[in-house]
Image 1 (cartoon, helix red, strand yellow):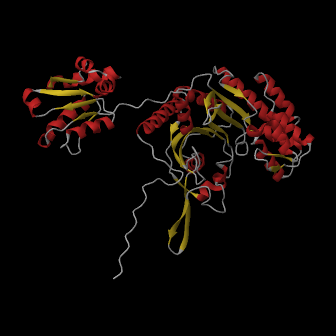
Image 2 (tube, rainbow, N blue to C red; image 1 turned 180 degrees about the vertical axis):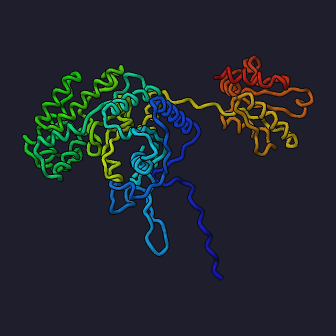
Image 3 (cartoon, rainbow, N blue to C red; image 1 turned 90 degrees about the vertical axis):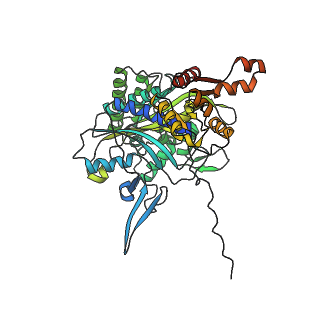
Length: 494
């Protein structure tokens, strides 16, 4: 009889592009989400928790590849027996689901509808350093408000969010641009071919990497990249390319100069002039609320997402320096982006519905706080009530309940109590500040032993025998004084 092969054990590892989060990481993220949610709520936005799964049809053109619905997203087709089922996908952002929610429930929702949403999203992309396939987004959007006052409010709220979570004023700037201005530039260039217009948009998106000279080369014949490879250009003449360069380099010494430069860049284009007017109005609105240009500024170099948005676009950039992996200084960069997207709901309703919003990259913002040394310090573990006698578990549970009722985080050791040393090792691994000991002798005498684990670790690390005698880390107190003594130790280490 052939020997039956054993089923191989599964590998205990996360899939590529995913990771696990422990302890302080989860606490940090929850605290940040809570802080941002308070700002959103303060501005009058309501919470929305939509489904993590959408139909591919609902995600529509915003899929990376609609002909292969499982490309770029995590998608699957439902099995409905003798006929093909619907294609479903994990949401890849929080904006596409909002469009579906608003179209589905618009008769029951107020207009404008102001909502915020927070949660994980999934993208089936190649993972890399710091790039994961599951990450958190933190969005706020206003649907049904055509006025750029809604865009100005989003910018102000974003600035408040950054300061609320700990980014100091002066360490960030919310930069604002407008897709309509770019449309005006394209109109002045006289580009009628949609393929050429798309190529120009893709080239503009590389501005922050290659600069104005690089963009000029890519709009023309092409350029050599850093690897030495030649990148073919769009094939425009210098005269055709000049309005793009004027647009990208129109940032002036102040808002008035920047707007004047933009008006020159769009020439006689009506849509371009409308975009400049909107930027001027946003600048006036945020200034009226007390937000200076050091916090919110008009900046035509904001080009990411211009292919997606229909009006104003925003980007929050952190301006302080950090050290990269090679020890060189560099600015931290963008942690949030957004803008106006008036065509998203139209896919469902057939009618244009104005919308504007922002998405904050929670993981990047947390990384920024860590880089600034402002990440949350790990909270102490629970007080551990040790078990000296299995038969007295009810007494120990009563003890831990008393601690919890006093507002003290606590737990009873629930492992094998046979080796007392292992109980203290467990408390150390948990980061516990205090262990409570009550054996038969202590119970008979009406006392408990309270061990200050933090002080004990400090003494063990450096103290002499004499110092150890002078600074005991274990105290015997009446059972009735247990709460007071524990609180005294916790306060001393807080």
